[in-house]
Image 1 (spheres, helix red, strand yellow):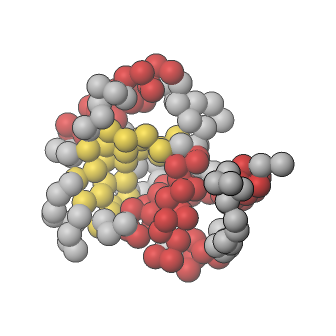
Image 2 (image 1 turned 90 degrees about the horizontal axis):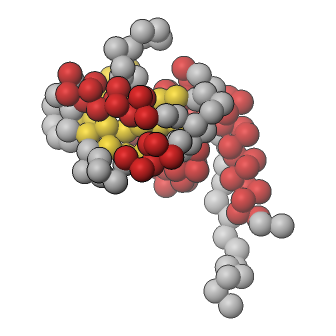
Length: 160
């Protein structure tokens, strides 16, 4: 049994149960805040191609400026969604884009991402969970209540 994979699966199930749909935006926003960004998330509904705007600095006037698109569909995202984000980045004068897809990305997106390395990042479910691990102490109490995890230290059997 791969313990690490089992843990990721358990946490993944909990997150998608609690944060499917619009609520995933709040989780991603909390992660960005924990990383030091000031964020703006519009009301639920039509979002003009952007779910979250994020920027450094206390008031959010600093750089980098990031447009974030968040999806929790059951299938991997395809290329038109990436293209839409890139267009939205231009419309909002953003420096970078973050495309979040709980179900991952189709090969048409992953092939294109090399060309967009200096402009766009992709987060799938494993990346989101890793970001939660890295920033857990800085997340809001509300998020910690929904995702109650603790760090466990153990020997790394792969080293021997």
